[in-house]
Image 1 (tube, helix red, strand yellow):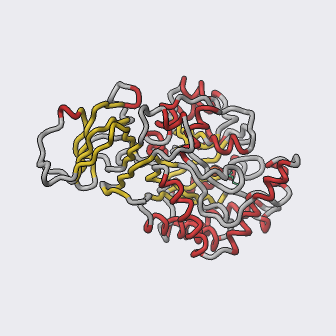
Image 2 (image 1 turned 180 degrees about the horizontal axis):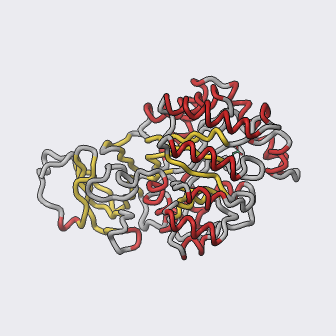
Image 3 (image 1 turned 60 degrees about the vertical axis):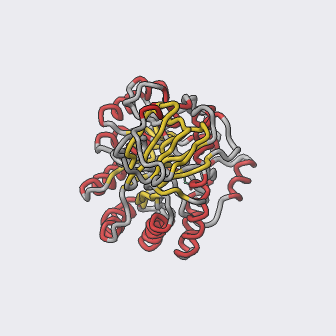
Length: 408
Ligand code: NIG
Ligand code: FE
């Protein structure tokens, strides 16, 4: 056998559904990489003979390997911050009140319109570094803080550039329909026309987005407007997803499911009919514990129903300056368990296998199986549950991306 690298003295949480152990675990394992892909995985005792003098051998000191983490919902390209609103909220104002009085998303929009690409790139790079240090190897980044043609394209270009210059893979999502910009305050339909007829064609012409998202909510876009945007995106061959049922039950999830969305995200107010709709269409349910925590939400997403109807649950950071200024995927694993009551295994599945499904890349990443891309992390932990259980002690010791050991 000839391989590019071999890992031994390891345990592996493969997260593969084909291995019946919790976490798809293989203890006393070995793993081989060839041409950027996983070439062999199994029990160390079954490892075929290979040329030990010609092959780099990495020893994991009895720690655990997991698939590289996938943060499937972020807004990490933005300028400015909203610490002032944090203070207002601590004086009693609500997220919704701040949004209605011209703050919230719109204040970040103003900062992004003023920032140039280089500035946004540097801010994004620092945030991507923070996620990468915790073992994230794929991230989704949304626009939505431009709300005009120029700035929406600028944010998406920066996101694409980050993907080219960083080892972390970046999937981009056009979220032009994130909020109604002040210029269209009294004519949101006209803004939706702009999104569909002018922004979307430009986004497509420059190949700037892998998916399209909408914020379907009473402070943003209604069902009919949501349907128009998602249908246009779908007709153009882009993936679709939705910010849905975050502050109220608008029926956005069922609509998105009907249109074949990859995921619906937030979903605190999702009801049983909505869950059934997701189950029928194979749409993932993305849980965003950072926003739940930071907005001090009390309405819990319907975890038991999602389990009952076997809807794949995803866990993501939703990193953004307004509702989740928490740039840590590992913290989300912990919060998914402590706040939303997922099991540590469900949480990790939500940031690996199910997150890959939400991004439509489940044939390449998210599990450790032969033929998958060699994106994985080495952790100095003694059980996989530790990833969700504890927080703050750096435990990601190595990251391999596309078969290359990353130095960070
Ligand atoms: O995912 N829900 C809408 N959008 C973001 C919040 C953005 C903001 O407040 O800046 C979210 O929570
Ligand atoms: Fe979001």
